[in-house]
Figure 1: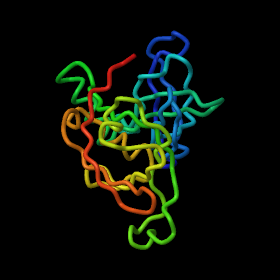
Figure 2: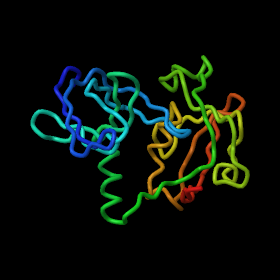
Figure 3: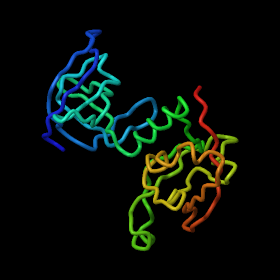
Figure 4: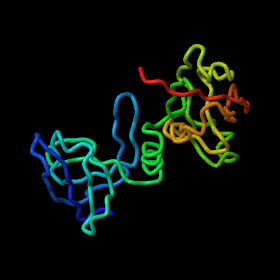
Length: 199
């Protein structure tokens, strides 16, 4: 919670086994990272420096609440929270030694839902397809730039992050039902995500 005391453990500036203390100053921050956005990041004023990344952020009862990730400025650090998503990643690492991610091959950004559809869909935004990778799963499914993603796998899609949350190993090679709005009409397609291969 905001105001909660936390302790950051790591090796800042090469100094092994260092510990700093602070408080959680904000929750739910977003952190841009290599073309992606990490969501729901914990902001803390516990002193973080290069070398703290990967270290534990623990509460006063020694429970790990986050993993130190970035220095966002003087007196401002960011940590990825320990939540359902990180537990899935940790479980995959423990079982397979790596995390497999699914890939659709599209770039999206928030886009407005036309006024006439807002009440029916009970929301105002979707994920507007800005680009589709040639030959990728999205293109093969018939998705195209200008489509407004509304649902994927039966779940609402409002942002690119909503789609990213579905791209875990279990989605690879399995049909993924996607509903888009195209020229004012709802269109259903079936995509089959492939495994994301690191460049």
